[in-house]
Image (cartoon, rainbow, N blue to C red):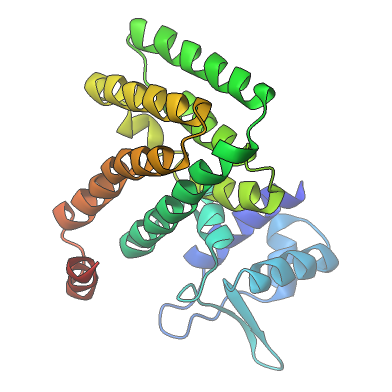
Length: 239
């Protein structure tokens, strides 16, 4: 079994087989038997999950699940494993993504190369074709935003922002089911591209901020419409 598959499947299994009160999970031996892998492989996978702050291994006690302090990478792993994500954590991640991508737009204005601009033009052309065919822009939206981040020439920045899109992998196609949303998003992408092309950092930031406000409002609406817990609603009202 590949490491990435094992991580996602292991995380899902630990969630569904942990004690609801204590959070204690099956032992390394039991996990190795279930997944038909060596205890060494399970130990390595658990070490990664522990680094992501998903589990805690306690000497002479066992393995315990705890997602309250889970990292952004862990949230992406949960999404890939089909595990339910805490609505407030998603909303807070969208807020963080907005901060990062606004800064990316500014940096891209001074660092983008012709290669980046050519790639953005290709994505915009593909978006037009998708809209004409009545299809959503989930793939093109992700590619457009990540190309802007790639234009910052900061690989760590790109890796961080890529995680946000992994988290939204299943939700983006639903978000773009609305044809009007796809048309509006494409028009805003064109405006952002033109600001980047003019190397106008202030305008690019302002346009990116306004563009991402739609996604932020979308998630807030889902949380409030889904009757999120009272503490979560209270936190959102203060956001």
